[in-house]
Length: 328
Image (cartoon, rainbow, N blue to C red; front, top):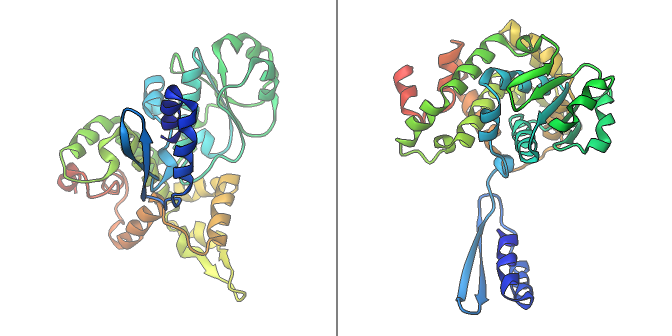
């Protein structure tokens, strides 16, 4: 928004940029969710007040999930998500730079509250294609024109995804078995019904984001993580030195579901999980993002969530959707 305003002024005269930037710099930096008002003057328009709001949670900034569902079926998308979650090598291939960029950023946003810790190059220049021979995890995007060269390279095990045809050029063949079975089925069903859920929620008075595709998809994947690791905070204990320490084994063994325990065995070895826990161990006090809010709700209702599967998962998306009340 600031850059748009600068460009608007520059179109009139470069001399108008400095007074605006000075006025902006004199304003306090807003806290998450807060708005600042910057008074400005523009010849012809007179005095104006520009309102700048800092998002409460930046996870969906510059992210568009629409491109993912345009390029990939729900089942294929979940396979890609599972591969990234276990920090495998993933290569996106498309005809357009914009498709590669949008899909790469969107699929990484699905990992929230975790962060991709490895090589991430949404558009890999053809001259650097040898990077795909790297033995460490990566997510890279390649234009279709590089496909013949890619097929000649000695690439280690990797998931190669053609975004133009919704097909895998190469895969490991175990992508359907990486996630806990019931959670995967619930994830798939919720995403297949996304349009229905969005229209149901838009009829309600809720201020929640679930009436948009971005908001709903984000909530669905957050619910997956809440179900799988939402109890993590119960196993952050205080040491004698006053430091916080994570009880790894107790955390994993506390899960009743065998398939979630098996998933955690692998996922807990990832750098993503290590970074997430380290951040929480060092954290004294920080504004709670959406994930922490959902975890709090989850822990409050824990005694009532013994039933598993789809109803529990969908209900967990929040009491904000009317149809959920009917389902439960």
